Length: 221
Image 1 (cartoon, helix red, strand yellow):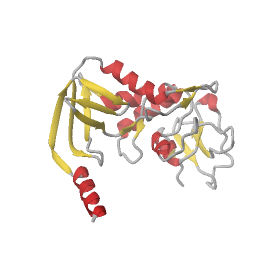
Image 2 (tube, one colour):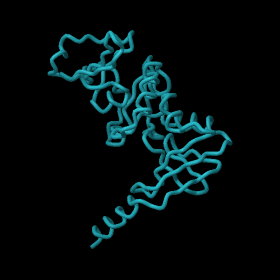
Image 3 (tube, helix red, strand yellow):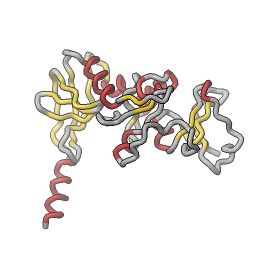
Image 4 (spheres, one colour):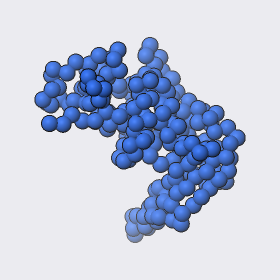
């Protein structure tokens, strides 16, 4: 009986609601969550590092990238009006919405400034392109190494997954002569002959999801 009630509650929370437009000054809860007029809002299409999450600097130092993502968002928004539109809620009751500040998309700003990656299953090409630019520019969390937020939440709380110092990240992120960002997995036709040159912006990935979040596509026959 208890499990039935819980399942019903989750279904109700995740179900569509009447389209909502909220506008006002926002409090930043974390890098991808706002509060406007007491309403918690989860920004669509992006995933920012958790508040407690740390990342690794190029020199090996650890920094609180989750906290910094939230602070950067709060500084950027300031006292300006945030307008959010959404018609669904997640299992935590948060409104799932797209938000803008003076016409600029909040998710896009987070992605292009390197404070969030595209949500792992989103079909958001604009956000993916913005995140790829941040990766190449090495800004925000891309300035060093990090665990993608969904892996961090699953308990992979290391402080860096984009390097290959321990031989644990085996996916090769190569940039072709035409500028395409392509990743190769072990066993692929060109995997063994592909060499990674970090000075050219090439890199190692631990998971395909991480590579795709950074804007790389999988090699195809």
